[in-house]
Length: 245
View 1: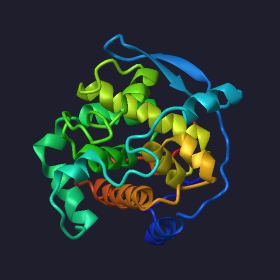
View 2: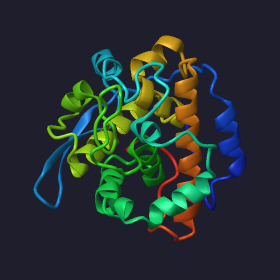
View 3: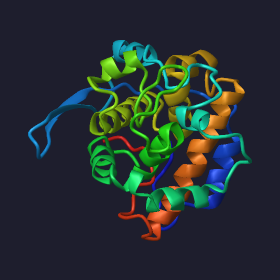
View 4: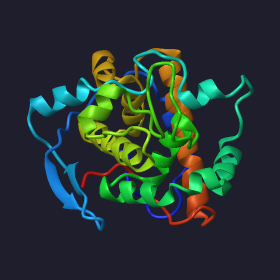
């Protein structure tokens, strides 16, 4: 599991994660649930820790945003082919863009509720939809966090194009994956895109170029958000690990 440390997150850790995408052992940790009522009176049910194998099977049946080996996200499909940009530049532009700032309250609230790094949730949204709430991919994934229809239903998201529901639903999916894979951010990102079942099937990141490219993109943006938010450029400093509640 990624460990929280004082000070900046070391850059060499990012490099190690980006090259370490081969199959790796999977640590199973299953969620139980707690009820939580937010300031608006909305009741949430949040996964918190281990239960039996049934919970694991349910998570593994939820399809990811891109399918087991699909090469692109909705954000990538909407962009013309171009050389990969510096993630620091991409993230700085995103943090300054009104389109992303519009959803800050929901992103921070969801990250806090599901005890996720805010930077990870932002990196997933950035990679999946580039902060466009009406995004639809060729695989049928929808909204800011690109939930597949059956995954959205499982998560209780009735309106996938509603920004708040999409963000909270995507955060809940990340938390379920974090519980399933012991907080391993590489496996969580792979599971978000390809589905937890595919990660389980291959014993690690599925050996498809599309999945590996997605994981690398999310991790690069995660570290870029970490740096900029830590510097105070984009707001409050986020947590640095997918920790258990």
